[in-house]
Image (cartoon, rainbow, N blue to C red):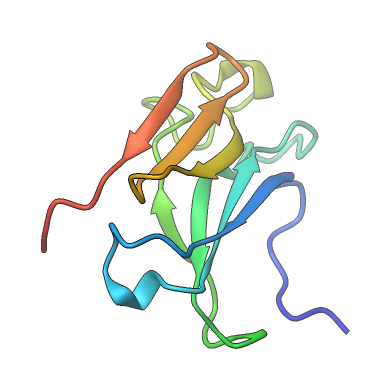
Length: 118
């Protein structure tokens, strides 16, 4: 039985559990998941170009997922066609600095996300 479900066609590409010390303690032990975005939802808009966070307690998620990093698709967060997405998250890493790094398969960019306060 799955621990959690996600919308179809979001295409999860990476999962990274957070054990860094840069984000608030509420992130500790939780999972970041990079969704590459859909490519075959036609005739519906494409979706899922995002990174979500799932808080965990031990081996179990405590709640559902929450969007963590969005806007990768560009001005239109739900493009009509997959090729219209500006960026597509495909990899995750937590650096020695505790920041989250997100790679992109469209432009080859890497984003560094750092917590700066409330």
